[in-house]
Image 1 (spheres, rainbow, N blue to C red):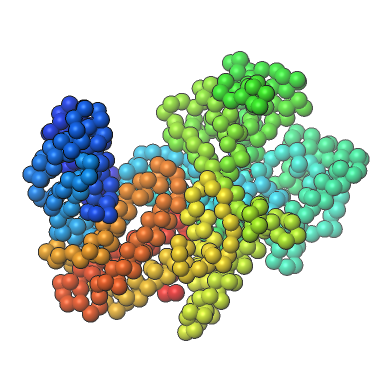
Image 2 (cartoon, rainbow, N blue to C red):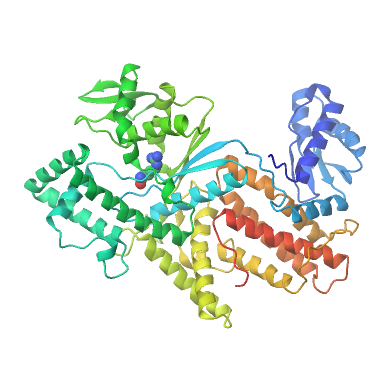
Length: 587
Ligand code: ARG
């Protein structure tokens, strides 16, 4: 079932201009009508200058022809004016604008089409490493990946989430051996007295194991023997490994539910899952002459990327000791996602430093024929989280910042801010709203900066009630809900004959642009575009509410304004939902 939604006015106007081009300049039929929102009118078309360049006819002449053709389109266009060097300023009639408001308001998808129906997209995100604490660096992949999954799913794609946990590798030999030799140190959830996650205990033990490994060559030998035992499937070693994985996953699960991300254990497909097929994956590359021996290892030399020495960069597919690593696993992962999961779009949300890794993996997968032109594959890269000093975020003692501590701090700060604003809230309500706004603030700060850029972790700014913050949007939403509580619950009927005040018009046109914004997020994979849109929408609402009284107006004006309030509240709530952020009714 295809949901075609409510066509945005931008789409109607673009179609009209495209049609005018086809009628006046048949030889340029199909050219981009270049229609955008405008500050001088509702929309503006910048098509004429480009057409003029192609045809050699002066832009004003091309534009004049378009104006002529468009003026006969009376139902759709109210006025078309020529401005500057061939730009068209276009206004649409008021009833049409109200019609859009009414149609979106009565649709449970806010009139947004499920345009990506039929596409199967794998979103690889989060991917923390077993026995290692999740730190602030894992925040971005988890939050960005989750938001993209939500947007793509809403637009109709069949999204398959994959949590590529780092759950395999030689480091486990060392950890298992150490645990075995120090059975008195507690690390399981059930044995820990305070609420410290077991992954924190494992993280500490892992570091102790590493120190022992470097200092004590006998321990190092026993650890190596453990790696062999693990790889050859020794039952006791494997059992201990499974236990470590399960305990770590419990800790990750705590973070996921705290963050409210959608990942479930069904999405956990870690590196170990691919272990059984790695040898065959490499054999296939060797048989096709793609992987070649080099210094005892097997490597693939890139045909696209060279290093600083001008020699091709190599992807190591089998190490000298016969082991396989991260690169080989990701090659096997592509095969699985394309062949078994049947994906036609693959997204990898990891930090920008992995750009070369993915570039090489994608190149090799293409050369091997595992990736074809039918499949799009993208590395969704993001920048670093910086501390107040502009350097990668660390505690004062120089350690990495635990994610859980950070979230605690955010919600505690949020609690005192919300409490001050709302002395009437009872403790339970306060707790809930503090959690929603504290977590929301952290997520929003991450999502609202352009993904590839670094950003500074600054709780004070994240929790500000002013500016482009999650709290501001949550508050804007709650304020509209409180206005609506003073109206009756019945769905308002929009009267299209009411003439639009400028602030109503600006708000209605912004509401109408929601679907285009989401389409933009889906193609650029940049959630900050949705944040920017919601922020503009909240500000358009503020102007509207300042200039156009709602509760004291008389019908039909009041009814139409209530409709605008409702649609704005729902759009804000829905948009925040796609960012994975709650929209409390009161704040
Ligand atoms: N575990 C990796 C890390 O912490 C992230 C995994 C990303 N996904 C992938 N298919 N390589 O860096």
